[in-house]
Figure 1 (cartoon, rainbow, N blue to C red):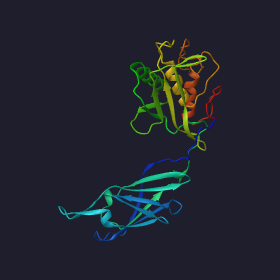
Figure 2: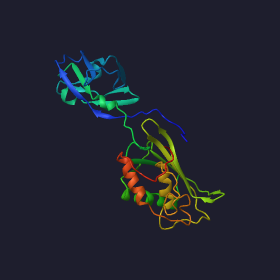
Figure 3: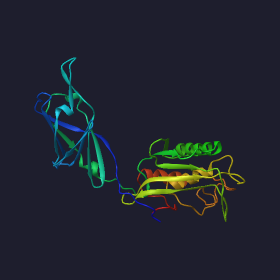
Figure 4: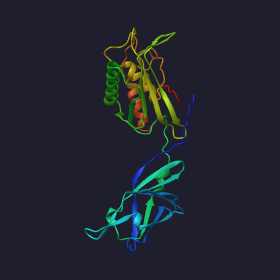
Length: 288
C-alpha cells in the first residue's frame, strides 16, 4: 500500500558552459548574466552570490560588479568575492549550477550560460529503487556490539555480492537504521527485525528513504554464523517482499532456525534493477 509520496526534487551540480563577450569596465559597472537552453529558451530562477540572491527573469539578471569582484591592491587586479551559483526549477526538478568565473575575471560584462534542457528530464525506473546504487545509511540509535557487527557484516556481503555500495553518513540518509534493546514477541514467535521503504516518488519509481529496525535477541533462536536477519531487513528496505520459498533469505521465517544465505536470483535481480533493465521473475515487491 502506498504510504507517502513526495514530488520529485533532484539537485544536480553541473558545470556551466559560458559564452563571453565584450570587456568589463571598472568595478562600479554591471555584469549581465543570461541563462538559456540549447533551443534559446530563457530560464527563470535565482542567482546566488555572497549574502545576496537575485531573481532571474526571462533568463536575465543584472549584477553590480561590486557584488562579484573586489580590487586586490597588491596587484591592482579584480578578484572574485565568492562562488556564484544559479538555481532553476522545471518539471518538478530543481537544477543548481556553479558558475566558474575564475578564468574570466574583469574581462567581460556579458555572461551567457548555456544549459542542456535534458537536465530537466526525470529519470524513471522499471522497479522502485534508490536513485543511486550507492546507498547512504545512518544509525539513529546506538546499537549493541552484536547488532552493529552483524549489520556491518550484512552490508559487507551485499557489497561483495551485488552491484550495491553502502556509505555511512551523518547527513540525510537513504537508509535509517534503528536498534532496540528489547525483544518483540508476536503470535508467530520473537521478531528479530523489520524493514520497509518509508517515502517514495511514484512517477519515477524512486525510493526516497527506507528504514530497518533491529531488536534484541534475548531468548531468540537465530543464525550465529551468517547475518540472515540483517540482510533480510535490508532487502525489505530495498523494496523486496517475502517469498514463499523456504530456502530463500526472503522467506518470512528467516533468521530463526532457518539460516539461508543470499539467493543468486536476488543478486541477479538487484543488478537488473540498478542497471534499469526489465526482469526479476518470481520476485515480490512491497511497492509495485
